[in-house]
Amino acid sequence: QVQVAESGGGLVQPGGSLRLSCAASGSIDTIYDMAWYRQAPGKLRELVARISASHSTTYLDSVRGRFTISRDDVKKMVHLQMDSLKPEDTAVYYCGVDEKKLYGRLTTYWGQGTQVTVSS
Figure 1 (cartoon, rainbow, N blue to C red):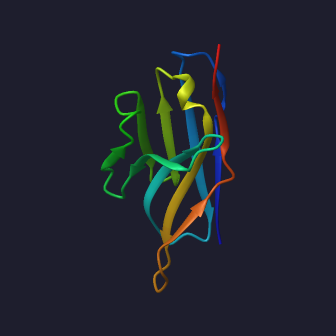
Figure 2: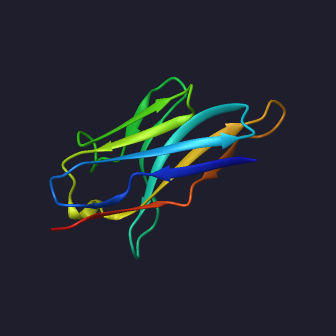
C-alpha cells in the first residue's frame, strides 16, 4: 500500500505565501504524475497543478504565474509554492500520486488534505 501525507497548510493574509509539501511512502514501485487538487466549500474538486515524471507541468489558469509545482524524486515528494495568494484560493488542498507496480495498473493515491485559508 502507498501512503500520502500533506503538510504546510494554514492561515495567510491576501498577498502572502505558503508552501505545501506532500510525501509518498510505503510499497512504491514507480511514481508517475504527482498533482495538487483543491476543493472549496460547495464546489467540485479541481486540478491546481500537475507534474509528470519528466517534470513537465500544467496549471489551472487562475493560479498560473502565482503557484509553482516541483518534485523531488529521491525523496518521493511534491511541493506547491503558492505566492500572491487570494481569498478565492481558500480550499482544502489534496495531493494525488499516480503509482504503478511492475505488473499492476496505474493507481492514484490521495492524502487527507490540508486546509489553506486566505483571509485578512
